[in-house]
Image 1 (cartoon, rainbow, N blue to C red):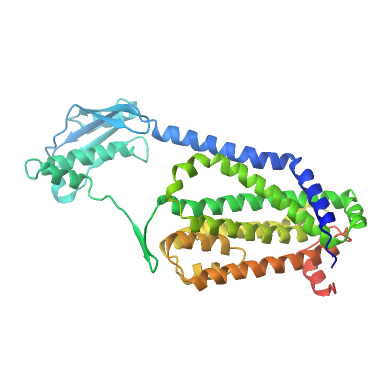
Image 2 (image 1 turned 135 degrees about the vertical axis):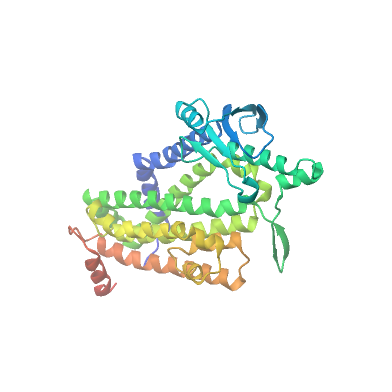
Length: 401
């Protein structure tokens, strides 16, 4: 296998230029994060846009309920007023809820102290948390009135203010919410990156075969140099894409910069690079066997879908990071980067566990390169339609290269 760095650079440059000119790349790089930000902002605005509220109530318990309460909403940075309207008739109260005159109707029964139950009627299935929080505080205040001091009353209203520390042989470290957000963000970014790059690789490779550009490239250099050049080119494009995405997330990163574990950041970068090289090389080799994007997607789609496994197992990973299923996923190259990084953020792992996962990823990436180069060398000469998985496996078995 002759490696020519000059020709690899030329192929990489060709791959970069042909990729960044694609609409798919521009949409994925700028459009996707913009859409996500717009959706997040709209969702945040409407979820926090709490105006004045009206709570209708029928009280059989004897709760101290004022005519109105003014509360400060830190999200909107303004005061909201909660009005309380007393009813003596349930039917009238329900009717006013239906007419929109009050937001809810709360009925506090006489045996509330024994049961702790109150009934709320609303036109929606979910109740505004501000309403339930306000009712809770009023009931707590009634129950504790003239029985405890203010300090005890405030502690009953807000009994917990948690500070969580992770302990290990290296000492203790205060846990940050962002330390758990980072791995989840990593999984999302990696999934989007691989999904985007799979489309780009398939598009570029099949287009080159269709227009006989591949034959021109093969007359310029060997298949190994083309393969390495294409992967390097795609990797550079991917890094540019990720850098642009991170720029959108920069305000959040800066806000939590002092709370991020640098070790976790380094591991995220290492695992991302290994995962990216593993997937791009594998996808590039597979794509070279096809002349039709639809046929290629039949094999490439399952590879991309495998990345959703960490999402499906997210609850198990968070609640029980040392479960045997989670451990198995930590050593499978298709899921190891995502699962291992999430485990690192949640629990203290043995050094050998991390080392083994990294070693598996490195060896898998090398193996992926070897297999893909073999596929690529064969694929550049194949123009067969309807290439099936069975045929691909047969080609690999029969290959002498």
